[in-house]
Length: 130
Image (tube, one colour):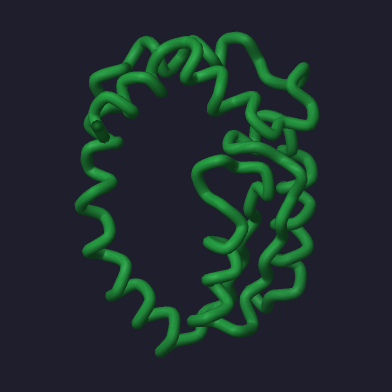
């Protein structure tokens, strides 16, 4: 079933679903962006398959964040059908000082909200002594 879902997401209709679901400015999405994943379906499927094994790396990362409390910024799409807002808020469990920004965007936020995201990152970095 997982493989079938991944394959469906790698069709043109599936790619459109990923780009347009929740997008507030779909006209900003370049048509070429929709075609790029179709040219590397096997690579995309390998990435989907590896998602099942990625959960094993979460506990060491979470422990690092809890122990070291690094400056953290999460810019998250509140309309993303895959990475839902509670995932962004989870950053604050390990790093209470983390900045979490939920933006009005879909899964591929950089396609439609790149200036907003760049501004958030710029403000975050300007507060840091780098």
